[in-house]
Image 1 (tube, rainbow, N blue to C red):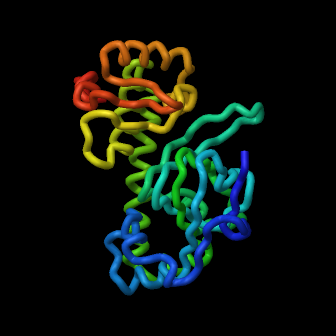
Image 2 (cartoon, rainbow, N blue to C red):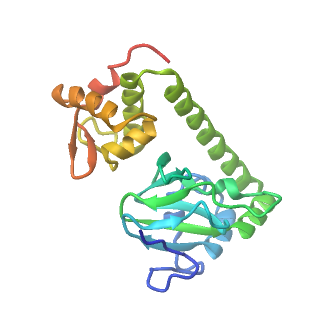
Image 3 (spheres, one colour):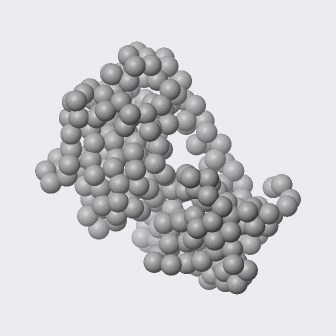
Amino acid sequence: MKQVDCLKEPNLEVYHGANAVQTDLLRKIVIFKDLSSKSLSIIEKRIQTLDVKKGERIINEAEAAKGVYFIYSGAVKLTKQDENGNEIIVCVKQKGDVFAEACLFTKRTEYYPATATMLQDGRVLFLDKLELERDLFNYPELSMQMISYMSDALREMTSQLRDVALLDVYAKTVKTLERLGNKFNTGLNRWDIEIPLTIQEFATVVGTTRESVSRVFSKLKKDGIIDMKSRKIIIRDWCTLCTLLHKDY
């Protein structure tokens, strides 16, 4: 699998400077969308932009952290491996999301917390770690946006861990479909919401085996709720999916 480096890769479409990245592009990112024009102008001068293909690796958990990434378009999976090479998907990031922010403000040489790989062709923005730390220190409104984003991400992660630990396979499979469906349902659609994961990848998110997920998927497919096509999971009937679990967990 190819890994890209936004600081060194010569054949990527990488831009530098304030004229390259327009304000409306940065407004698509969650932590930038409500910033004042003054704060945003600082970010514009330092941002780097690159186009990345599906399957390309952006960062590796074994390498020293250089900066923080922001997804303008496409989707990214964050994964971790054990000593035997078994991989789990920690989370999936969609356009507007941030990843590798855990490397900020550490007192030692920090490595990336996970490996990031593109699930779809897309565009990713990059900010140098030290420059972003200075900006967070100097611009309180930017700091508040970052803290708010990290708080929401932590809340989502704890809910996901609760589901993995406490729910049965059927319930946590449906819950995960709901959560990912919400993430990828950017147009508030009721039908044909595409999740760019294979069944095997989805199973690692759920925290169970491929066979267990396949059994649940077979039932949901028979009921016309989901379908699988071209290495994607497609939610055919969003409203029915959301009514499958009536109990609050």
